Length: 220
Image (cartoon, rainbow, N blue to C red):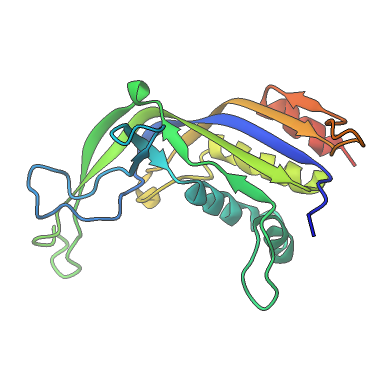
């Protein structure tokens, strides 16, 4: 049986790095002395197999925002939005796109970290780690949110606000101040289902995060 589509929202926005952001490939490059120990994740962009860009996976964005929304809502309400696998499986209402960088905006650097020996309180031998981070850069992000309630949408938009406030961060080393990003150029289209001729109805367009949050904050 097909799911009844009551409403859907499609959003596009930029995630702009504001300081070091580390989303690691997850593979150590230590055997290769010409490369940093950890490099930023890349993915295929477009149809050409040789065209790659830095990427923040949609699953990473989803996980970060899900974690934040546990501070705003009860666990069962968060599971209703993001899904859950367990005794009773729940399908996610929301899907985040992989966020690909506009590579001509990206500035990278190599940061260094080392573990501290608890006995000597000095650098632990052999623990130096080099990390490739994005210092500045624009990542094109977006989501599709289906059959949401106004309350659910409001909380999602507030969690996006918290990215700008620095309370929501991405990637590794966030305890060292990494992962600060900003939401920019937010644009969202909303439709309230379809009529008998399969034409969208009750369409709305929001050209800023502030306008969308204000609308759904007042909606019943």
